Length: 360
Image (cartoon, rainbow, N blue to C red; front, side, top):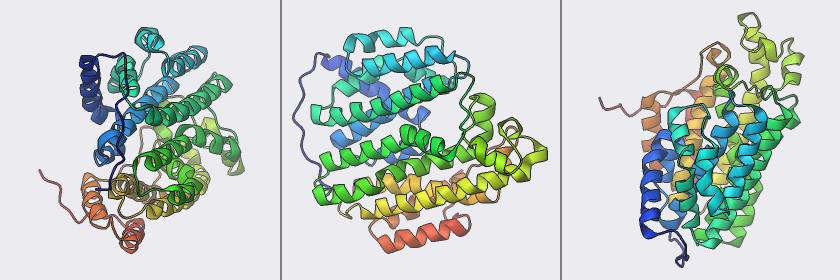
């Protein structure tokens, strides 16, 4: 593992018992609310792992508020703003779960929102130099989410590619920026020169993964979250629109529009790959963290290119458990070789990578 810089303990008004309760909660809830990151976060040791776990949970709380299509937009925007106030106000943090009562959504995500106070305890337990970047970038994300919620009171309907890019920056590019600052702060191998190089592509790392998630969940987002992220301008160019996004009569036309975003995601993923390869080999922990979601995204994008499922009611695209397991094994085996990682990516782009059986 890469060496991690030491952190001085931060004085806190939270009792040791309260911090332990928050740690137990975060550890227990993470697998229920995360996807690929639950696998990756465990590679990050010490304060860095705590910081990324805390940041992920905070981002998931904000995302749960934004995605609740049954709560009126103004209330969701206000909740997002109150959530951001709670980042630095312990009283607001303790009051937030009651304020957010009544949201709808996935049960695990709602359970997380209901203990926002404990996640804020985790945040306050971080050293100030670690807490600062987390607060800054979660705030940037939340402000952007509130903006889009207010701009689209009847459900998000992205209009142009530029607006799509702006949305992806707020909800995912910010994550790439946050992670890169944490690498620089906690991993001695990521010095000033490495940090400056990584900053050039850090937004692409987050936005690439977001675009793949958006594409595979087109139908889910439209049906369950009243949100459509494929721009109206792109759909209009092929004779369709938001109202016919899931229409079987427009299936091939809609896929032509989506194909443009598959190409966009592929370019972003290639930038994300370069970002990962720029991480020094001796920083093996953060390499492992980045490689796995990247490989899963390449595999999903490959399947999206040949599928129409994400454009049908109830449909989605998901790689097999066997491929997930195979990519975990071979991704970690290739971790220290840039050439091996490039070859693995190119192989995954061509056909499913299923070399490891799934235990029954």
